[in-house]
Each structure stands twice: as structure tokens, then as C-alpha cells.
Length: 84
Image (cartoon, rainbow, N blue to C red):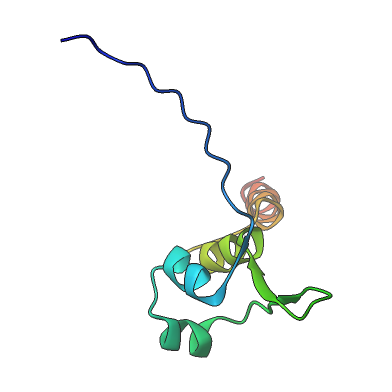
């Protein structure tokens, strides 16, 4: 029995339908439509799609203790001045 090498190149979609976006976020569609503040992008033909990058930013913002780098650096600078 000989083996076969299969090379796949998968390009992830950036723009998702509401069903795909809900699945990406791990939410049922009805829940996603209630909870998600990310607006859909409306294409010229009327198609509504959600940008994966925007969805990921929203999901990251939900994490406990989520901070952006600037806020962390600002707090470190404040901490250094207090201890100096």
C-alpha cells in the first residue's frame, strides 16, 4: 500500500454571512444578532457580510482584563513615577 501526499492551500474567508459570523463567534444566530455590536458591511448588490477582523476585535474586547498596549504602557509609566 503506497501513501499519497495531498497538499491543500486553504484561504480563509474574510467576509462572513450572518450564519458564518455567528459560528465564528461560537454563538447561535439569534444570540449573535442580539449581542454583536459589529455592523455588517453592505456590498453594492445588497449582500450583508461581517468582517472577521472586526469580529475578532469585538471578541478580544470581551476577555476579562482585556487591555490595549497603550493602556498597559501608560499604567507602567504611572507606576514607575509613584515608586520613584
